[in-house]
Length: 249
Image: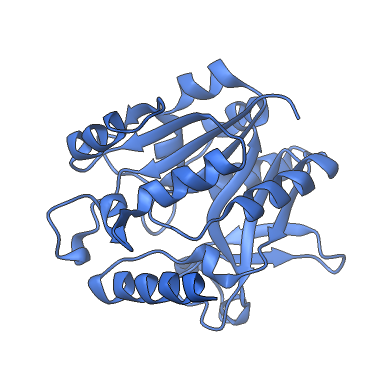
């Protein structure tokens, strides 16, 4: 298996949350969402963890300092996209090597089983990158997974860059990825921000790896809940409802 590490993206402000705390500290069943993500990683045996902070980073650092294990942090001073967030963790990636999973700090249902199963596929297919995807009823707002006729990953297209035909695709990007660290580092500096949002997308790293002849794949999570995050209080309440339902099963 080699070295395993994780980078959690937790720099977002969450303007629509109507809360004075950073979005990853929003609570599901009384526990910060960031804590759910950390628990899943620890259960999957991943101990080398770096959290990318930004908005109200002192709140996240304060929370992390209360944990019984050590978590590294790095700062994304300007929020210029997921690719840019990972660039701030470059020193961490260089130090650890091996394979790294990159996860959103506001998706509480990215569980241990999904992390381990996607890693298994990532390693057995000898991939440079493996995106964790899910099939959902309403894909609007999410990046779409494009596959070729053999089912191999062709591209990931952000919602706002999709054609009408691509908008019909129901397999979406969860925002979770496995990367071979050395391969990721080889393309990270080549990501450009020439898109509608003017941001550096981490998905472009996959495109760069594919175009350089490397393997990349998509692992479809068993549950569509793995992709769920919260952008407003209603969605946060929905996460709490789902979490309660899961507990009662």
